[in-house]
Image (cartoon, rainbow, N blue to C red; front, top):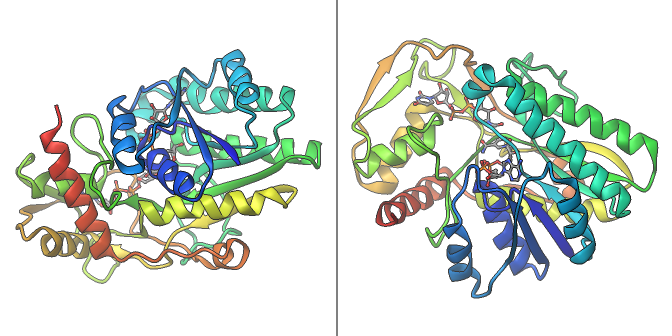
Length: 335
Ligand code: NAD
Ligand code: WQD
């Protein structure tokens, strides 16, 4: 199949580009590089031994999207493009709605006029808000606690309406839990601008000596060791989940939401220990007060994905940490 990856130069998109290409699909990336670097294309070439087509542009440019869809005879779209920093979304809600919601409307317009109706959307476990029960299944009520999460919810709702309007639409919303780790080559990985907000990229930068110490946000949560528990999923498992989702949408009409998680949670202290094991380096840390807006625990049931997509995460937290460390070391050698 010919598959358009909006935001395909980013963290999850680039790993998915590898998996899809290796599975024999023809990948076309469209990205405006607002949160990624053009050098990822060279690094993808090192892994794949071939050039991928990349169109530089904004998903809000409907004419550009329409041209890309038609010129490359696209069969399905995976829509990764969007802004994703929770804290930033609280101070810049207009930019978040414009990029995420308006970007999706633009994509839907281009797909509609091009009569291309197979879509996989990057949603998030953030649409479950504060968990009412664990593990979280797809029937858990949805809500949002910040503008980023609300933009994902608005998009999911909009996609439901679109699917209801015409049975030709085949739409799957993948609700990712906490993606971490990197491709086993270490050539691509998560590359946040400035000081990382998320735990694993922060630990990785401490492990290579780029940052001195980790702040652990609270050890008084009702969890096994008092620190926050999350469902960390290896980005390569997540990427393989997209391949499975594409196979599913090919012959399932309508709208569906599916969790992509492992079904198991790990605490902050467990992640520190795993990273120390993978890197052989000590991760110094301080316990500080809780981060505003954080929850104690969040993890998924992975049953729906297993039943409907015949997919489940295979890689361990050791794999997540060792690949993340390999990437962080390689990243230090880049400009
Ligand atoms: P990322 O920032 O690394 O990748 C997003 C890519 O989209 C970047 O390359 C960026 O340049 C591009 N982009 C953003 N706005 C664009 C626009 N208007 N036009 C064209 N390109 C644009 O993020 P990621 O971690 O790879 O996340 C991909 C998707 O998955 C996002 O939609 C994100 O909300 C969602 N998601 C991510 C996580 C996570 O923890 N990483 C969790 C759940 C959901
Ligand atoms: C994990 C745990 C922190 C940093 C966020 C978004 C979510 C989703 C994924 C997109 C928590 C603790 C963290 C640090 C720490 N993204 N922590 N010190 O908050 O589960 O989810 O990313 O959809 O929407 O909210 O991930 O990695 O930030 O935190 O102690 O420096 O690590 O308190 O318990 P989170 P995270």
